[in-house]
Image (cartoon, rainbow, N blue to C red):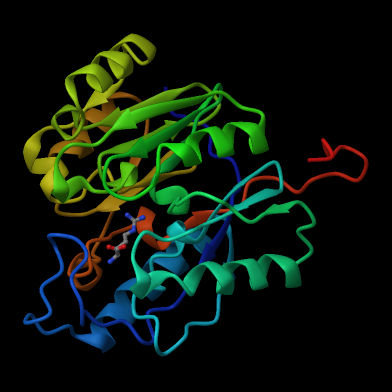
Length: 281
Ligand code: ARG
């Protein structure tokens, strides 16, 4: 049975100044050249694909001295119009947090929390219908999980990442249906205890294999029906179709050189807070 898509609002940042000059994850090799025009064209394809599916894409101004800014998912987490700002683990990316906060302030978001603890936004927070899944081990601090729970008033499930190639939660797990708690993930990226937690909470999850994970197939974005993912993650296409999803392969090979793909480039802006409905936090 085909699934229903729901219109989404995304925040993206064009890779106008994208380059790999430092290495903060195993995918980044400053010795490997980046084809900037190709990176831009691939990113534009993703942006245009979202728009053609009926989604809204907002744009963040790229800054020359911040080559990783294209990975907009890391800059904040937004649920019910409430914005939890980011705080980056590495000095190289630190100023991105302020650029995101400025954007939210200029765009009518009133409930903004500047974090005390390190969290890399949707890189490590994934939103399901019933909870917030939260990665830790490489970037976001476990202390940020409690901070997120308090701010969003949603239960947070902490998950331990153990493989440096999958340093953010969104490189190893993707929410396919955020109305029905359906996910896909790569078990080997997680500790034994976290694997058991995932199996207990999501017994029907789509399990990705090593090949799909290594192609960044879990770094995907779903609108409830269409699942945009790297086109090279071929092993996921049929399992997604079997569940009624429509996989859409994207080529983001240049952005993989920085250790990111579809999801990393896409921050979801969930819900506008309605007047009078704030929790006053
Ligand atoms: N080079 C960036 C970093 O290491 C890539 C971030 C990818 N973003 C993501 N949401 N996983 O921080």
